[in-house]
Amino acid sequence: MTRKKILILCAALVFLGVILTTPLSNIARFGANYDTPPSPEDVLSVKEINAFLSVWSDFMQKDLSKSMAQVSLRQDSEIPAQVRRWLEANGWNAERFFSMEQRLKELATIATLQNNLEDNRGLLKTMSGAGADNLKNIIASQEKQFKSLSYNPEELALVRANLYQIEQVLSGKAVLE
Image 1 (cartoon, rainbow, N blue to C red):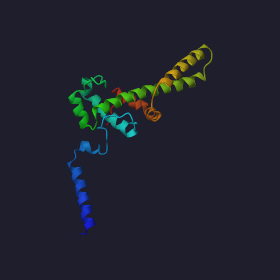
Image 2: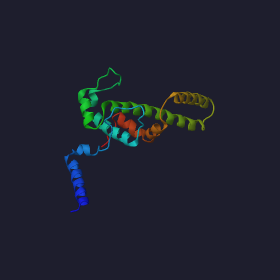
Image 3: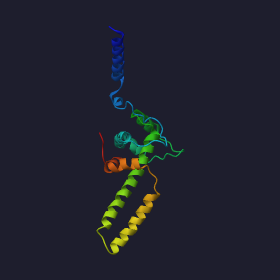
Image 4: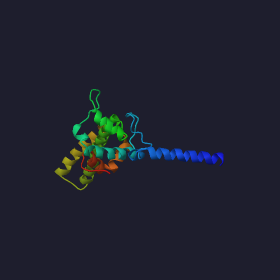
């Protein structure tokens, strides 16, 4: 055998060994980097949102969600060790996981406001009279509220594209497999 063939055979055996010794639940997480604490520079991606929603769906079905009705990420809040271990086993850092939850909920609220604003603008085109004046006031209020919000437009576009699914999973009404 030539040296090249031996190297290829060794590499194949090492790869096969890694695959065979990795639990099936961890194989899908190769390359996932959700076990690091959140960073302000992080921008949500479709892959991370989908990974979060899958784990969140499972989290809501377990008794873990009952032990933590609301987690605040202030310095003095304590995430139970049981929840930390479960999240680590599922490939997530606890702070990143709950930061992601809060971020998605905020973006879902902003997306809902934006959708309502667009619907109201469309409705205004078909109205006249006192109802139209009231709707103009509502639209002005919504525009003012929307302009005061801070968000990443790319992240908002991702959430808006899947708003219904995200809201259903976050509220525990939908299950992802």
